[in-house]
Length: 428
Image 1 (tube, rainbow, N blue to C red):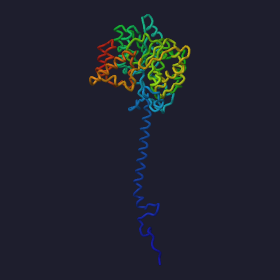
Image 2 (cartoon, rainbow, N blue to C red):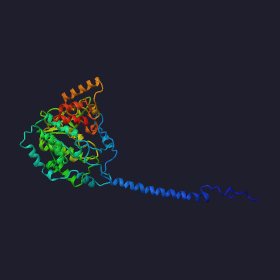
Image 3 (cartoon, one colour):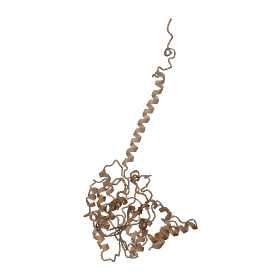
Image 4 (cartoon, one colour):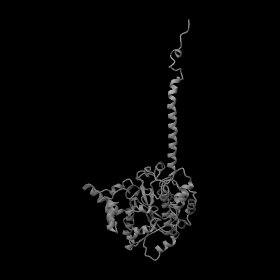
């Protein structure tokens, strides 16, 4: 008797465990070769796209990460926020940064040198000392004001020009020096001409960092930056250099510094060696954070020296605010009460009556009688208690100044070129 035939003998089209029959293998081979070819082509295509993307290190990001710099105004600062969100669309005393984000694949030297090209040392900047002396000497400058604009000229718009206007409304005999490469030009002179024609003392001068930082702790730091030995980080170098430059200008000359998104409401003449608190503790009313958007200091004040020393010692181009508001807060905390450091910390109402979270309310017109009453009350409160209003341009630059809003009424009250200001309020 023969043993029963196996399944593999009787049914050759079925496969044994772990094996495919020859007919199916022949059918699958073309499919497998096609799949392999497709994967190779796609891999090469993605590699090319990746290389092209990273080769454009100077191109701006289409959708930059959201900016969330601070927790609620009464709370303590959250450093985690700065580590999670890096600022690419940065303000340099105005609306936007002068440069673009730099690829993480370039070297530290390449990144530094690329950004340093934003601030070339020119014949004009080399004469900064001489030109500044000529601007201040021989004129009745009752007050000295400084602004910094390390950004393209096209960004210096109507709102920034109104900041200039507000300075002269409260200080008609002031001298305002704007440290800027781009405004120190023929086109920039045309922007400032309406003020000059009316007798106001305003001039833009390309800054000479070597001169302004000489004999300060930041001089060596700046030379290292020029040599490409400092990693500028992801945040706009223009923004960080603006923080350094404002301290250097006040240290060299003394006077008042105001950002270009600040409306000056009344005279600073009574202020001396003062910096403003941005936030206070709700319980103790002690300040928790300062801001350097508005400062008034004597020439060679030791606190300014320490600001520059801290900038050079702890510079970090990857944390928003680290070299600005957080820097002045760190230093002021350390030196508080020491002999020789005579300065005042003004309450938030002085320069920052409305925090960045609520600033939009100042731009909105009232919708009914109750809102009109609130607008009038807020306006009266600000005009009685504030020297200036910081507009937080990083958040508010896109807001329209609506007719009847607090900002529109402040602009009407602080204008010196009032026809121009009215059109600015409508278009801003």
